[in-house]
Length: 61
Image (cartoon, rainbow, N blue to C red; front, side, top):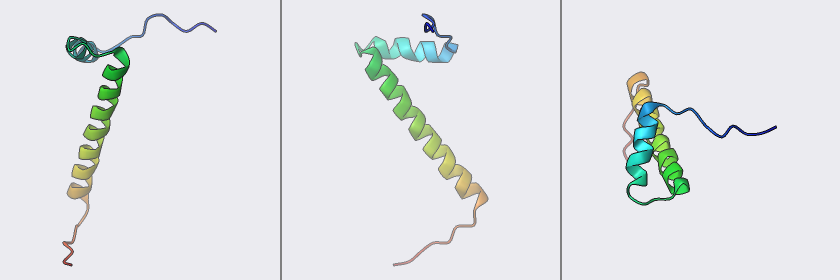
């Protein structure tokens, strides 16, 4: 089975890719940065959700 030559991307993703590629990064570096940014975004989102839904107790050492 052949892989498609074109991959549909959202407009904001294309804009982000072009912005990064202007800094003379390789495509692999660009994708790695996008993945890391998404991981950080999800972590922050998860932390906010936990803070909002859980009753947290402050621990003293």
